[in-house]
Length: 347
Image (cartoon, rainbow, N blue to C red; front, side, top):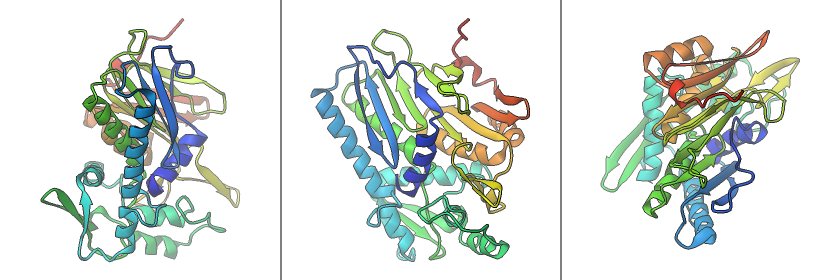
């Protein structure tokens, strides 16, 4: 999904944090499709029939994802978001309600997290080599970081309803909108909407780290989703959750990085400093009613770090699961609101 999709995609392809338990061998009565989108992968598993069967489901989902990429892909020079980024912002660009919903979530989450999520942070992400630009050959200078920060700020972004569409504007021509932290969640929600319209009410949707589910699998059991240990051990599972109709989104920092002059740089950029984070939080999972909201919050938590993320989650009574890398290994913690979703551990 645009810069959004591709960058987020890299993270998901290199290190999927959420996997579908048993999805590799679906029951005969289940329908499953999969493919690539936004620089990452997606999979949809149904235990209800889809009108027209599997070919119709594949066509419907692929068309939806193609439309979303045309709206929010920064890797497509003709997309709506690319036109916005390339333009001066005046007059504002007319965008559809589907895209506006994603932008508004970014603005709302930015205010809620006091700027830890910033959908205009693209210039800093690109400066550090995690966007469409190539990896820097040397660490950006303080002046370069300061210059890029002058182009960042959600307060410079405007979204105004007008009839059946919205007007997207910016206060400075250099403002760069990047929805990479939101696209996968938005895609999961939109696929769920299509399924509901078609009378499908038992499904599991995965777009990289953003999962949306409802109902039961073909065996009549609740869908189960695994939170994978952030290590090189294949299939090492930290915990299993049963979302029970809720959405789950996980963000991580431990695979998408590079080393320069002997120092490791994470793709998670703190808008407040303009630099990659250096704390030990390596994974954040969030459960909310929509994947779009969860997708926004997991990234903000990753920017905060373990202590601030847990304090924020408790303050706002969020269902959050964090994994921190310590000298003794990985340590997981969660809020009380997350506990009801945890499946009993197998002996």
